[in-house]
Length: 220
Length: 220
Image 1 (cartoon, each protein chain N blue to C red):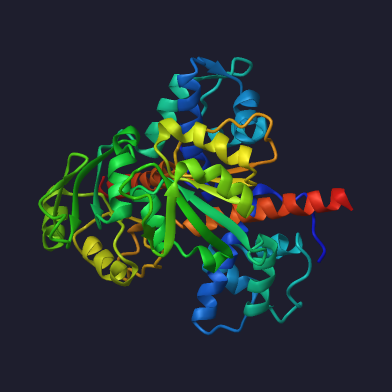
Image 2 (image 1 turned 90 degrees about the horizontal axis):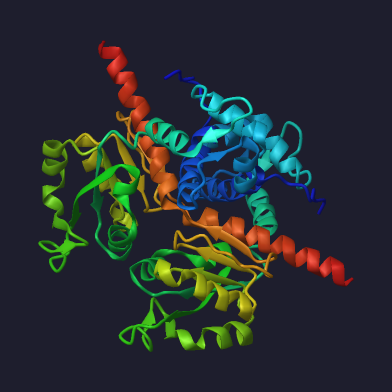
């Protein structure tokens, strides 16, 4: 497949949204969709959609729109869902447990191999079918199982030291839920994807503030 | 303050990132920063930063850069952190507990007033200092306390019905962690901000896949 290696961050961020929206269309039984209709459901213009997808090759046929199944599969391949990536959870506290119990890792191509913690009550148990090992075993496990990604859900004060262990053991990426900025000198090739809940709530705060101002304006 | 009401979604999404980055600069003791340096630390160009902030009025002084404290406070005001918004958590399972225990609502101007659940073991307790009430009391509490936002962390099958209760009781926004698309007919003014963990992990999946391909290419 033709690929443009200079894909912008904005496009990369939109691809997972396409993937999710196309799944919703599949559920509704939609077989074919125009760039206009797809754009409308996602709050994008038709031309933005055509441009985004053009970065990765030609998917649609002029005047016929996109086949939903084919487009979703192609986007999935671009996102790497067919690569059998492996992930481990580090930190099986409330957040780790919530993700293990509710997040469908396999739906986006990840195999959840194990979890690690230091709490004696949790070590040796299984959570939603996944075994929890002691954190002492983390590096050995990551090395022997060629784990691709470490999900970091440990308390913030130990985030950096656990991240160091993960990269020394060879992970390619860290999915960081700790809200701690990580420094990984000598491992610039390791991708850190941080989930910042505050950014989401602040966007909501902005939008409700705008509405408050509009209402106030309308009353005056 | 001058404001452009046609602010794009992309700019709105970047404002919380500015707010977070400026806090990090404050921690490091940085007093003044150029748009170039601020951009570099955030992966944006200087002109993008100037354009973004121009949407909300003039903050910097040509050639002098931005005062970090002032800029952060101004952006905070735009985001509504000074408005005393109130939030309640609905669903005090693992995810709800994790957010109540670790997320600093007050740091971004929210007052966490209460949590609601149906589990008898949880109702009547406090989590990280916040009381947990029975979900039967949700609508009455939201009405009498003029709650602005409901954090939805209930199981997916009941997400829609709990969301209906929240909007009927008058919330302005829903912070939705259920991965369930919500339909709120007749309440188009209510803002729904959904956290989709899968989009974040898929972006990480894409980036590690790109690195795999590059390594493979280099070996061939």
